[in-house]
Image 1 (spheres, protein in one colour):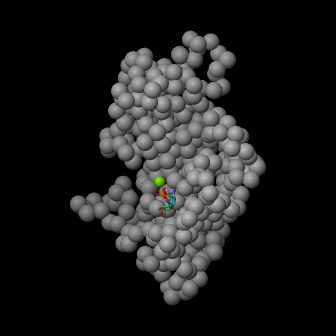
Image 2 (cartoon, protein in one colour):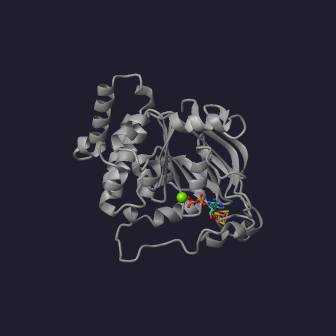
Image 3 (cartoon, protein in one colour):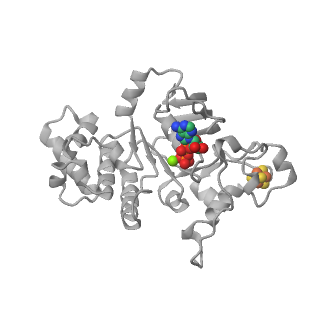
Length: 321
Ligand SMILES: Nc1ncnc2c1ncn2[C@@H]1O[C@H](COP(=O)(O)OP(=O)(O)O)[C@@H](O)[C@H]1O
Ligand code: SF4
Ligand SMILES: [Mg+2]
């Protein structure tokens, strides 16, 4: 891997007044040109990590460990102003709700122009042509008309394409997509994922794709980080982890993936129980109450992370290299 764009080293994050950390001792790196899929059920801490990567946690949150963007610690070495500049230029996001990413009182074309920072010194006609080309790339019909419209005139699916176009026009060093298709219907979701798959060829920076869907990880990502109740339970290349998942939680997620079930029935398998709330996190292994492979020892002692190769690891007592 080339020099990491983003490196997390033993990062823990606690919200103000919260009974426990929402993210605990998470470490991973993302390099240029690489797409990391962060996967886990709701409540696993995925969005907390995304907010931290943008330096956008609520004030009063506590962050320990190192979270470095191009070597500089977001929480130790950057002022609020520098963080704002970073978010405006080097880090782009595709949010779950595209309305949050766009200005409701500014026409789409003008907003997209603002996003293409690196082209501001180019002639207006060249910038406009670039926007139109990008809107075609995200398969928007009538791009010229869309540029003249306001966000409230567009559907959620079209707006999500606009926000993907905005992110791509920005040519960010780091792109963070936090469940960008969750709010969309199945057909629109499939179209957006197709667009993201194509966009992967264009993106030169690093990408973090947050999802609860293993088939999305398989399609779009190079590496995977499996998060459970705020802890990184397994990480590795998508090829290795999906072929030979080592952590019982990763195995359970794959068993529940509709795309992997050979003879689908009307009832999809689910993992019994739920992700524990912050004030109910078990001692010992965090997955023990739901783990089909748990042994007595698991309740008493939290497992350490075992390296399974140069860039693969899993945290489970039963995992051996
Ligand atoms: N602003 C907040 N203040 C306090 N707790 C929060 C806040 N946002 C999220 N949490 C808690 O942090 C945990 C992780 O949440 P989140 O990062 O949203 O998970 P995910 O994105 O994987 O669903 C959850 O227990 C959630 O209730
Ligand atoms: S340490 Fe024990 S409870 Fe935890 S995932 Fe492994 S087998 Fe399951
Ligand atoms: Mg979330």
